[in-house]
Image (cartoon, rainbow, N blue to C red; front, side, top):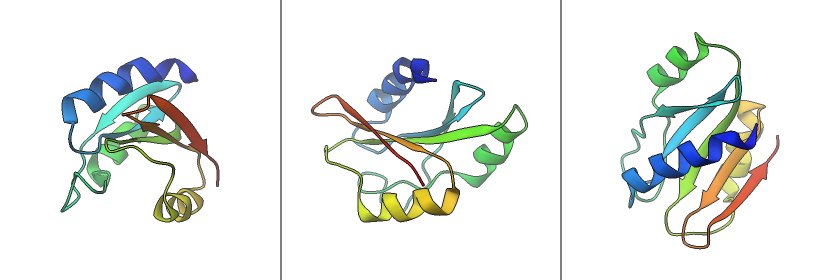
Length: 102
């Protein structure tokens, strides 16, 4: 399931300095819009994009970037637990991937 990284990294670079976000559907990366009020500091995955993605298969994970770097925040940890699926986070400056699980 890690084959999505290349596609996500391209998306994150396009969205920089904002956080990019998407989902993994059946092992493939699905781009979603970040509709957060402050997209350089946070992400809110567009619910419509999430619903459309779910029509193509089971959503296996959430993916988002940390354009300024850093580990998973407390909000990331809580939100991951709420979604009940893994979250993959790419810390862009140091090119480090992390996965948190519910």
